[in-house]
View 1 (cartoon, rainbow, N blue to C red):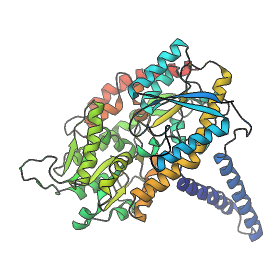
View 2 (tube, rainbow, N blue to C red):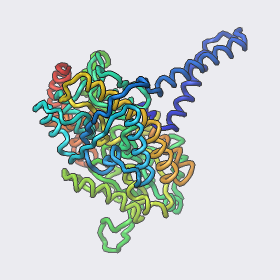
View 3 (cartoon, rainbow, N blue to C red):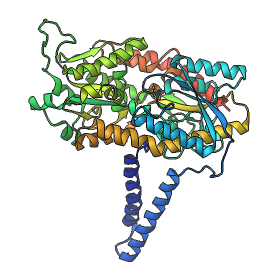
View 4 (cartoon, helix red, strand yellow):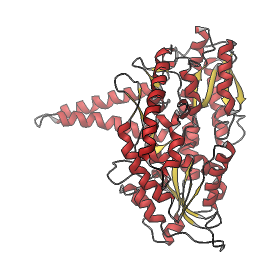
Length: 511
């Protein structure tokens, strides 16, 4: 994934762009090439790279673009972790100030009024569907979680952004990994986009949070060095947490009042392992962009299950059981971070959102962060997973006026660009790096986590698989000691072929 929407990330990518062309130029030069020629070539390459980067970061909206105070409506999911991405009075802290400033910049740049219409998350897609069907055009821009938005997109409820004036989702302030995931057909049709405007893009990334004091007292390997050396694997995590269970409350039962080496959950907390092992079951054909089920990956799923089930079922692991209830989901994730702040866990799998909500309890502790472990040492890099509730943006197909659709394209582009200037600096460089991270090593781990974020179609777009949600099938399977991947995969193969064939037919019919 190209996650360029932070100043720190942008700086790193700029450095690579400047170095790589120069290195390529030097490596192609013969041994008799003069130093002057090399220097000139290097300088030209650096200049070209700078111009390329400037173009990727630059907003190309006309300077005199104005819409005479037209009112733009945003229908959005009013839920924790996302309800402050769009709406702010500017008086509730750093993030609030940044969002307020961004909105003012958009208003002033385009001379528009922004109207934000909150909705329960479960209702956004239904409201959009009804509005499109009725041709009322009550909503202009719709903001919803990725997994809830893809099915309406395939049903034709959003405009094709690649055909909309003023918007350019190839720019660095849009998240390219998500763009690639939801761009279809060789014509590159795209109906949804996400980027710097979505603070949830940062909040919903998974990490390993560990108690440094507990690890040092047990003389366990330094986590920073373990990660840097490429040794942070599922086997390593199991070896670290083994034999750490303590009956802290002396009731002779393993329960939440005890101390565990690892506390996690069997719901969303298990989702990152597929991406961390670089396993993707739904992929796109390189030529046609058609969705297909990658049966070749199933053997690796079986290997992954063997490792994850050992970790989950070790005596020093406690995991909260899965539930379909949203309230229970929120409760479980809170339980996991609370176990950590209560010093009942040496390490946990959690979201950055969990750290944010419990930062006051975390601050007195000595802790560090790491990515999710690799599958094994042969895996060449770490991969980080962003949860499927990240906000994405689209223009309602209920908007019939081509002129208005173009205006909405300009609004989305302005919002993304102005967000890129302000939001990452406020949330990532200030909130995460300075407030949440306790030392330079943790900041380095933070960068590593975000540099390796990867999207997965079967998770991010999970709700489009009617009748077989692979994400939900994998959760109990991966942590089970008895279920077999082989038997499950036989059932998946036939169903997924039909589901993806239907999805490809829908995509082909989209405007």
